[in-house]
Length: 162
Image (cartoon, rainbow, N blue to C red; front, side, top):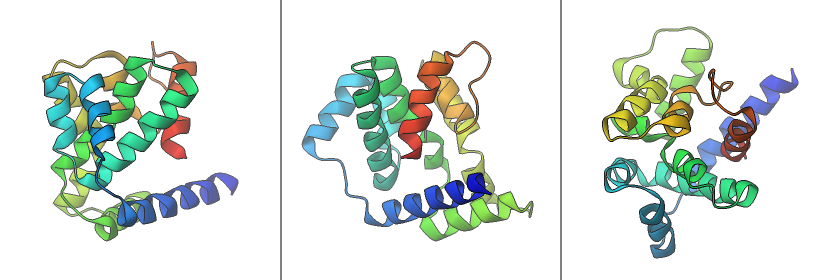
């Protein structure tokens, strides 16, 4: 029951975070460009401003926990790039999550949103990313895939959940 309540609280925070998100400031734009390759930065900027805000917030929390671990910061900035393939708003995102949890079929745009991890990983591989950057896009919020450092994975998960 605690897990269900924790997940519900996380989703409520994300919903309201989406609604109140502000575009990246010039300082935050510099953070993106300082840590990403030009192709990765293009993938980042293809996201909705709300997803950019979330990614920057996650990257900041990762930096507090892991210092200047550039690979973890890149993973944080890029973990949701697959959502760019599903340009739907907060209400439809929430509905997609609920319908998926209860096992009902999703309309195409919502199914694309559900599959954002796989799509993001494909996009990141196409621009030359690898390692934990691609793995986190593909497998979050689940457990680390074989070969991933569980401690580094835990830092990313905790930063994404806050």
